[in-house]
Length: 500
Image (cartoon, rainbow, N blue to C red; front, top):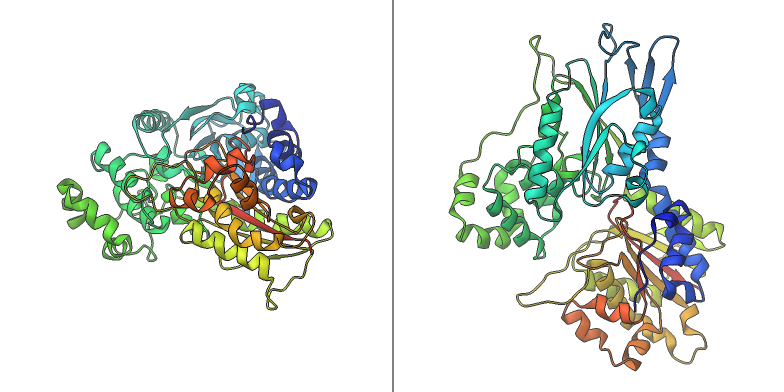
């Protein structure tokens, strides 16, 4: 039986405490405090409020103020209706993604709160309401929060985008627009140029197969009016600053949320390259969808940045607030503070989740000589794996739980002839957004006892992997990890611990 999700009140506690409170299986583990501390530190490091406080500052002046966003400085007029030649008028907040609500609230706070009147309005499109913020609407005022559809675009996203377009018409040329963008924006902020049902069906087709996210998002930039700079275009000629939380390994800005504020440049791949990278998955879909095939055979040109009457391009800047690397580095630092040798393992996680799980489990068993740490050690890696759902597969799971369960078999070899095998090694996986597939778990933890405990309960780990049903087995063992929606999103983490 799995634990309840963290209550709204628990969101005020450190993540380490919240993880222990929400996960009795974790709390009972002999290494519980350490595991929670390292995983919690990773989540704390990429929390939008933490990141905004690090990157955004308000400098008050005798007249007006200046907003510092990363390396960029914007002077605000004392009277927003009459900005001077080098000043901006009102400030707006428009964005989307799983981290957009918490980022927007942090921006309102940094600009002095609703009572300061510096924020004229705006809208963010989220997947869930943040419980803490839903109970304190004044922290977002006057920014609206609207829910969209995810992982597939749908009618809620369409309605949210219509409302965003309506509000965007109020932005004046001398205003400043702050755009919090994070993972999930591809579906939440969606205005496809193809028929909506066909577009949603194509995305579903890709997501159900072993298709990497990069070519999917490059294609989205060709097929959605609010991608490839389409959001920034709504506010032209007003200046735009996008504040980005990256869920893309490598942090290619054009691929995060499919780049709603990132105009195409010479690095944009040709459509033929995108089609080749999508391979058979795209070919299969196009056979039964002639409208999409016709569009891709003769696509419109990529949009160019808008220019004013003098020929000057719209001022658009980008600040990277958080990335997977920040979470990895925080996990390593905390592990070291607890006396462990720690290292980030590269390259990033990719490919089939079960394959990566077996590889990492065996790595933890072997601790090869060329690994630059010795036990007690923590090995941290991150990325995004895939699960290929074969026709008829109906199991409950996600890529993080599948990766963890696949590691259980190699880890089981550490049980032989040893007392307290659970204390020898642990592999913990975590979706930093708190959502792993169509389940209520964010990830899982496995150790040398997992396989034997499953078999003693009449469960078959290999069969669960074949059926992509990792969640059912791990939840029965109380080895899933639950966070609820975290309000951030920087891909996935795997934390490997070896203690002897």
